[in-house]
Length: 175
Image 1 (cartoon, rainbow, N blue to C red):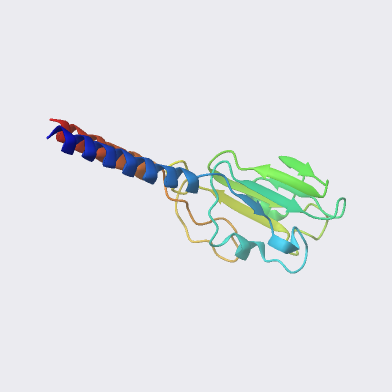
Image 2 (tube, rainbow, N blue to C red):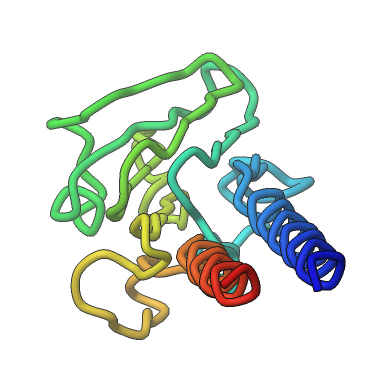
């Protein structure tokens, strides 16, 4: 009887370890090149469409590539994003390669603050999912006029559920 229990315990431990390792691997940070091969540019990229189908989570990085001094990556609030106004910028960079780490759930807004560039389409809104995998705040479907919103990554909570079930089964097996 002890051999059966030891075997069952070993199998359960391996299953839980494998499941949770896979879950952790899928939860690692992702680096997104804004605009893909075209980069941060005034023509050829629809940034509203670019965010669609992408999942943004805490720890992910956005990389903006552009000719230095020709564009800016200016982080602004929601109102300034829709007004294409950079006067109250939260940050501003003209280096040609701007790296932004998404550090918290919520929506982050970026524009090019060169006159006329934002109104021509150089603006990006990225919604970072909450720690539970759900988008922060109300859930709405983004429209062409609202770049907010991106798909959401599955939560790590499922790993903990599997662990709890495995430990309950182990306890039953050993009793």
